[in-house]
Image 1 (tube, rainbow, N blue to C red):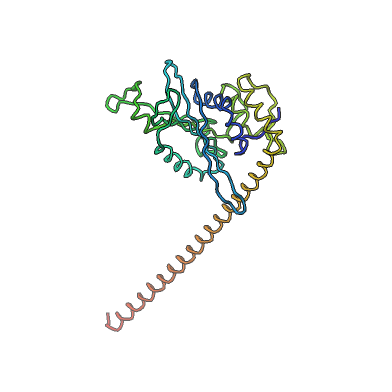
Image 2 (tube, rainbow, N blue to C red):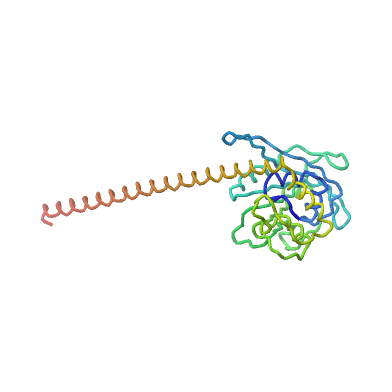
Length: 286
């Protein structure tokens, strides 16, 4: 099966805009049953050179049914990053989410929703070799060290669980549902055309709609044009980053040379003062 590469923002957005697909992806990652889902796309426009670029942030208000049969409303924030520097953007955006007004879902009541974050990374985290990392909170009695099973809105709305997918670390094993789902992100399937992945094995039925939507994206001429623009913009960003790093290195080199010159001058002054002191001692007959 030939599919569009979801590592690109345009394809990822196209994929997640389908609520049915988003429900399958999110449910598989967080391992919870989702009964309702509502897309809440966030976007802003920024200028980069002569281009006007749309930056999308994808949020979903969802109603989750847990293993006890209980329902809870949660805000799912999904972001995709290509560079480690994106962490500052994540922190800023997460802060914005915490101060947003209450939202409505399901039963119509307004309240601040607990947050779950999902990050798709296009780079590797140092020291973390896992393909997917779940960072979930536990309530622990600080005195007895026992786990507290009950949940409380105060704590839930001030802390959050998070999931991190390291795309470069995806492996060929297919042991779990999540590994099968992440097959559509596996960059080892990339063809000569970097926008395209080729999935050779047959996916489980529950993930076929995900692959089929990406298959449609691969044949979309307008989307391919967006991918080419996105690639060009990414090259511009990388070039700017290289120039910025080179400027920093040059500045550091200049500072280092200045410090070296200052040290040499200080050393010369010390030597001069030592000679003067020796001369004064001779004059005093010491």
